[in-house]
Length: 443
View (spheres, rainbow, N blue to C red):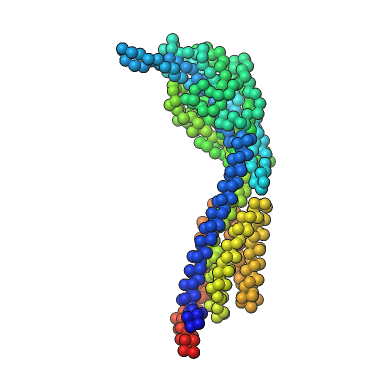
């Protein structure tokens, strides 16, 4: 009993306990962050499952002409022969298309998928084997093939007919050589060395999340339109022209061969051309898990400032609050994040935030009145919580300025605490508290 009374009358001991409780409450806050990550991983696995059946993010590369040639190696006594491939990229490449997005649901999770209709055309310069130091007699142009890289063949919805020099060829799956492309379609048109070639074809392709293109042309022009209002232009090149509004976007890219780091022709598997891809990702307007995780990272600030409010009420009103009551208030603050996580999986984030914050503010306010038995002090607690949750929501909307606004907010709070306690004689309070503790021991 004596030690408890000493604790009750010691400001230093109560501050130490409050600080200790704040640190202890960080443990469940980290567990809540793990829960958010787990739910996000679950959502990602659902997206992956739907994408595997509908079509994953697509990357279009090509067309590319690949010509086999005889390669000789060894010494004068024994010469061996192998087949290698020479690869040629188009002189110009034009891609025009539209992306029609669609929202699919699996349980409570939403997945963005799309169907794209692409029209691809262009020209190849004349093929000259001597430009790659290949003897004409070893250049097997009659066995050449043209390939188009498609990253996920599941998304192909119709037969692909490639018009090559006014001759139509039905594309076959698979590519004879994986020097350049790992997955895609190919045809074997009749090629003539020294003659230019023209091509055009259309692709009806399903995919999810994003659509990318590889700038294989000496000049590559891509033009896309879509009804999706939240595009994220990604990859090595941004659109030269773009227009985004609530009804969708239009974007156009113009990429020269000088902008990338591979040539127009080479032999073997010496180039990684797909690393230069560019395109667009279709983003959800709100990612509830990312926003919930961002709010959870402010848990230490919420707990500290709420505890500070109650301690200031203790200090100014000489009303002592038990550590268990501090603990219950801290746990209520943490429940906010689980409520926000659960509700945001069903409702839009701003509504989920409003409901979760209103529930916690009401809970702590009612509990505070039962503890403090004072309408004014309870009103102060209510006001502080409203300001904190309102300020946090503003921080969530100002992602680029979150650090600046958060720092300014902490500065203002510290200045306010310093102002309210400017006339407090801490030595006198500590002396009175110690005298009270001594009297309690004597009695």
